[in-house]
Image (cartoon, rainbow, N blue to C red; front, side, top):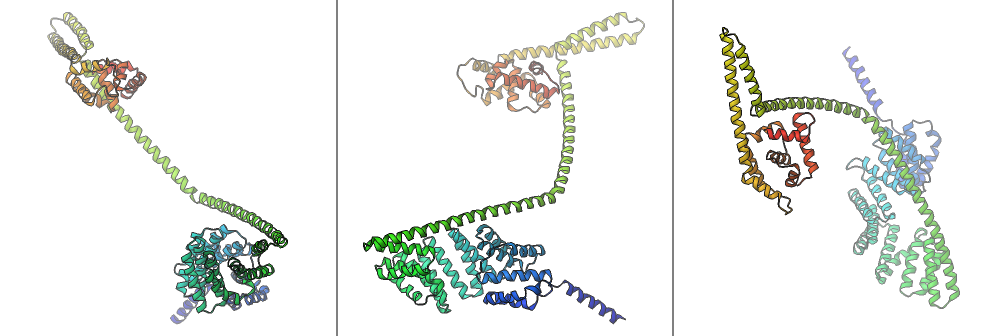
Length: 584
């Protein structure tokens, strides 16, 4: 029984692994993939025979087939004319998060958009291909991507960036030990150096590429590199070396390289005075050259005709040169419009992508925003309640201190004395009216009269001392100094120095004990506010306070009104504040 159970469990486990594993592609597609890199024409032919059968296969197999069709066409140098197929494949692999095929799909998307002359979009896809490649893996694809990016940067004349990309590609080729790719890459690096006028580095890299191509017996690459070296030597004025490197290329011409090599040969012959050879190569260019090469050929033939005093030929070639120039301008204009359209389309796509990203981000963070706003509202409400509670408590303490202070000040005032006199008069009248037999009441009334008389006496003494001290203060050195400063005609930002303010503070506190301490218990004054209070205490007028503190009269008035509101918790006039300060 246990054996059967174990067998069933093992079978279920194997079935699960099989279900989770990627379904293998048909062998014919694997063969087509292998052929695409080395024999793209054969791969294209094989893929065409599979076209009908693929329709019945799974979606993953159909997408792989479409990717191979794009790859084979690209390897066969068949220009891509539409992005519809690659976008279908790319979106499928993005959705499936296929780490195996996604980097390659991004790469061929870049190749498609390069053919469509949409360089920004092509570079964007090449960068995404690099991002999706695993680290330290697939150096061959990585090398291709960097090479393509370098070429695009060359077309856009951003040579420093192109050089960086070609160097990165070269690092990959060194790891792969791929000599042929290294030679092609050295050629591209050399050309980049040439574009930034680093001719020694350019010549060195060309020579290294030539040595590798010669060692590998890659004749087409040898021809390309030799012609490039020869062109560089002509630019540097090294004509003998240019002729020496160009000759092997002339001896092994193929159809694709004729235009370029004949252009170099004609330029070299013309500059070195070999006019017959120059004429020969110029005429050969007219048979097989590109429109750019033909333009240069007609220009060269016109110059030779002028030098030979042959105006009819010169006129003929000048007309042909103008026609070629017009054709080139049309091509340039068309390419410019195409580039602008590509850039506009790229910007539109980027805008759409950014809008989609923004919408997704809004959806994702909407709950976070709501939660954050709720939490913030709750926190602010709690903080506000706490602030109000502390404010009410602080105001309550402040009012109690103010009431206590006012009570103490009242006991030193003339009003207190007058009120006590009235109380004494009333108590004496009650004593006269009291029954002679009610000894307890009479004793109480006598005691109250004595206490009130005593309190009045103390108040009178304090009031007298206060008036005497006030008189002394008004005769003090600091008061006289302040009066002197008020009558000076000298304009200064510091009519009173820090020492003067300290002297005034000490004089007031010695005269009115606890003045500063009592004032600061009620409110935390800043320096300017404190100075205003000190000057009020010695009966300096608001306009003079303004002068001594370098403020306007209006500012002093506002300051006094605001201090009253802060201390008493209600509105008042500046004179109300002055009265309070004078009472301390």
